[in-house]
Amino acid sequence: MGSFLSFRGFILGLLCLNVSVGFVIGIGVNWGTQDTHAIPPATVVKMIKDNGIQKVKLFDADYNILNALSKSGLQVMVGIPNEMLSDLSKSVAAAENWVAKNISSHVSNGVDIRYAAVGNEPLLSTFNGSFLTTIFPALQNVQSALIKAGLSNQVKVTIPLNADVYDSGSSDKPSDGDFRADTKDLMVEIVKFLSDNGAAFTVNIYPFISLYLNPNFPVDYAFFNGYSTPIDDNGKIYENVFDANHDTLVWALQKNGYGNLSIIVGEIGWPTDGDRNANLQYAQRFNQGFMTRIKNNVGTPMRPGPVDAYLFSLVDEDAKSIQPGNFERHWGLFYFDGTPKYQLSLGTANALVGASGVQYLAKKWCVLSSSANLDDPQVALSVSYACANADCTSLGYGTSCGNLDIKGNISYAFNSYYQIHDQLDTACKFPNLSTVTTSDPSTGDCKFRIMIQPYDTSSSSPNGRVRAPGKPVCIFLFVFVLLFTIM
Ligand SMILES: *[C@@H]1O[C@H](CO)[C@@H](O)[C@H](O)[C@H]1NC(C)=O
Ligand SMILES: *[C@@H]1O[C@H](CO)[C@@H](O)[C@H](O)[C@H]1NC(C)=O
Ligand SMILES: *[C@@H]1O[C@H](CO)[C@@H](O)[C@H](O)[C@H]1NC(C)=O
Ligand SMILES: *[C@@H]1O[C@H](CO)[C@@H](O)[C@H](O)[C@H]1NC(C)=O
Ligand SMILES: *[C@@H]1O[C@H](CO)[C@@H](O)[C@H](O)[C@H]1NC(C)=O
Image 1 (tube, rainbow, N blue to C red):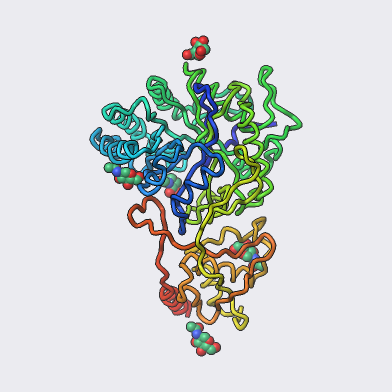
Image 2 (cartoon, rainbow, N blue to C red):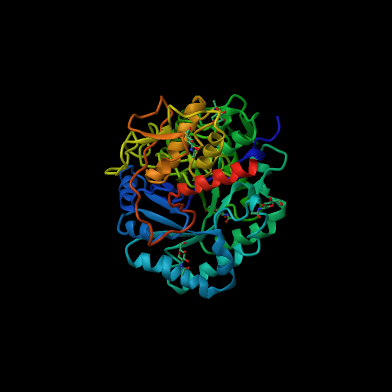
């Protein structure tokens, strides 16, 4: 029946298991910041705690976020973006500066930092080997810097890796697992280093991507509710791709002499929009199935017991690259504004607790005007401009707004642009086409959102935080230039 294992997440994934800790490990969450309108960090920290989440994983060392985590009681994994690996690999001094600024100062300020994550899926095949030579030296330098700062017992290094660094060849049995031939030597060096320093292997595992990439992937095998034709691997029974993927890693570690290395699931989750398999029902089913196992310390056939995992992700991020797919902006347990998406029992509570005190912009929307002429060539140009500069990933087949007619589609695009640009008057001036309304155009599951009040992140605006100022003048210029070109 072919190899399901070989369809494991290529792009995104998170799995964490830390067998070395005896007490309750709890659940973690990834806190990404690639959004146009962030909820204030203090509000997010409160929301995380209200939901009984114990750990957060960050993709960089955002000063305001780390400051908000001070004395919060939450454990923190601080990430180092891939773009910094080159500098960190070349000089211990650079790593020492990074540790001083982004670890030591926050630890002194009461932030409970447990991990420094060096790079983010640096060996992903889409990076074409760009970080192949820098990742290991960067890891070594950060570790040396932590030792020098006297923090190496408290703060452990790790590298969040995509599950594509290992596979089971053409077999579907975890026991055939090993590191992928082209990165095997490097992986063994990294694994030895992690082991020598009492650190853990961090892996991202994405059953959703298995389904997304392979239309023949058996849907039930992606979830945790049983599967009609389980894989029998020498008596170990696999009914879901998460277990099989995880244990393929356990076997790969074991074959290379590191069978006891702790594993952290760095990212695991399910998106809710932007693809026919990305919806509230599947996300609820997956995340609840996973959480029930976490709470019961079920583990996997090869590693029974507690699993150390970080859900992906906390809130939707409307400025993420959609290169992996339109679903990429919809991984949140919560919408961008901290509203829960579905019923999920994370800790003791049976339902997610939303963010409190979030401030919204005015209740108004930008839509296609009733007098607009749909044959106007500016319609297509305006829509593509709006979508390129805002977020249209909820439009299209199988999405939350997939049933809109052409007029609805146009209104959705205009409104997204208008909201992302803070409802500026000039952001609803699509020539002779748009108008502002106070009547909510949302229908059923298709929500025409109102943005939240922009939160000033000027003192720290790291990767990907898009805050394009509203410049509708560009629309006119753009349209005119195009019209003249056409004529
Ligand atoms: C600290 O982290 C931030 C965010 O990742 C980064 O921009 C900055 O360069 C780091 N500081 C040092 C001294 O490395
Ligand atoms: C990787 O290579 C492909 C094909 O050569 C190219 O299209 C892509 O832009 C490259 N990506 C990076 C991150 O260099
Ligand atoms: C793994 O741990 C077990 C139990 O603690 C021990 O018996 C075994 O020798 C360890 N194996 C390796 C490879 O360290
Ligand atoms: C609405 O827009 C989506 C995404 O751009 C497109 O796939 C769909 O065909 C459009 N629907 C109509 C009725 O034009
Ligand atoms: C808007 O429509 C009016 C009248 O139909 C026309 O004269 C004008 O050129 C249009 N404006 C733009 C920017 O297309």
